[in-house]
Image (cartoon, rainbow over all chains, first blue to last red; front, top):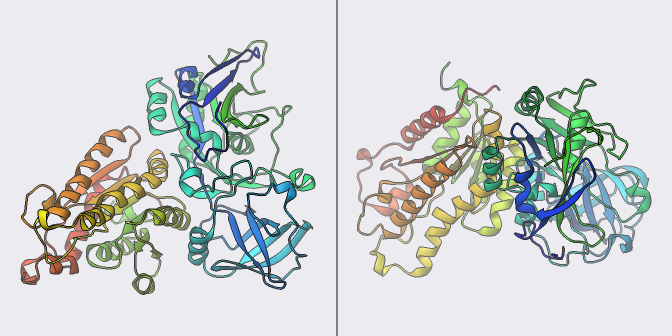
Length: 324
Length: 235
């Protein structure tokens, strides 16, 4: 068992819990993930890199210190980075449990937040003292530079060591559009991708702006996940079609991938390529149209780093083959 | 289809982009329609080149500094929305006048390696996911590492620079083997002796007339990249 307080996302001894369609459970080393693949399976992961979305600063009208956690944006357009939705905390940092973090000073529309080199204005209050829509000053390049130099990865008090960017970027990280790391993808490295090919399976990616996982506030947490923009490459949509024709399974690495794929699915189970916004929530009763199995990271309740691989509700337990 | 068409909309990052070969590459690629992000250490020069090259994204950073790598990578992939081609061009000659290897201070050697080997290694590693995604989408996935004939010829006085470029050259060859299945191509190219500030620092009495113009080398490099691309990219 590895304590999740270790600021390393790729422990060599992490485990994989495999649940088959008959609800049988086995534990294996996480590195054995590829042994559960079959020829013609398609593994799809989220290639979003993690944005340094935690911004410390000052609420200019009161001079009070605050932490802003960027939580959503309306699109993936790289030049449209002026507007974000955000959660605002009062003084303190990640060392304090989010449940115990004080509220920010009362925020009003038009308030300026000074966040290191960045200046943002509260453009809209979104029905909760912590939740606002922000508009950043400056050009897109200036905003990217400010985020890159001043932002820190969002993190929580169970991990006391300060996370660095290299701790939260997966090996496959591409555009920095995730607000927290798409953590299930830490199972992937270049060796594993080679092993997937050796098993005659395939690999593809989507880009999904995975949002924050917790706010520490019950009312806000009920709103999660917020709407999340995504992009399905043409190559990925084609790979899904090919997998269907060959009788393989679509295996989603992480629930954000499930959310994006199902948002882009047509009623008859095809996958639309292109840009979109995922608005639906995935739950036990969700009937999935694209995804056959899910590889997901779990940390609760014992706070161990582990992954689980389970068939999706798209698979009928009575007649579906087990993942292995 | 001309090679110009293959660069329309291509997302390219260039380190050391404010002088010599790097600046010539920025201009050549922007003129061919590429979307270019360039990196250099001096803010004033970055802002000047960005002003003079509409459409190019200037990024201030030092690839020899470990803590700068992710901020650079965030800005490259953030501003371009991904990455198709990475050109590791930033180089450090080491102390001048050039000196024998045994007269080279350890700290000077370390700094040359930090710029010429560890910088490209760290930046390429951070951007490999973006490059592999580009390759899967048949857009690109090309890394050009700028090396030197000093990487393969033992020139007295060029020990720090030459040995670091030898490491970069061989690293490129290994990367090319390891990522061939991903579709990411690695090129390791020598631009030749050019009329640049770096060459002037190394050989102050060289006759500029005998040297290549950096624009010529940039043109040759861009043609080499075009040949390595999978197919023309839609704008």
